[in-house]
Length: 155
Image 1 (cartoon, rainbow, N blue to C red):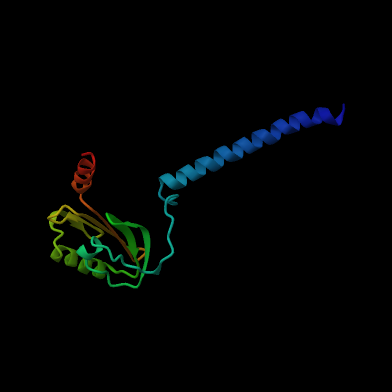
Image 2 (cartoon, rainbow, N blue to C red):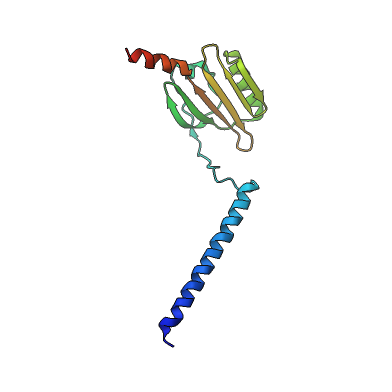
């Protein structure tokens, strides 16, 4: 027999072994994700110097007591910012400050999150990541403000 005739079965064997490894590896990864042993979406950001926005919408909120943070996005209509070096006590104090600032409409609170509107319809959502000591602040302008702008631009 020639050496070429031995290569075909070896190629099939290698392909079968690779498929078995991929299948088993995929099953293991699926199990780890389903059992919350690993989180493929948990991409931690590196906190830098906190730059609190100077926009009108940012002035609706108290400035957090921290010098570290990460800005996911910011516009005149809102922002999404992680604030570092936060404890549960600091988070609760910040929630109280937001209530005092007027975010009292349809509010919902628990030890790790807070959501509310103010009387003008601005939507605030806070979340506290206890394991990381991070508070996420997300605020957005009312939707009807955008609809009013769109309807006035049509005329």
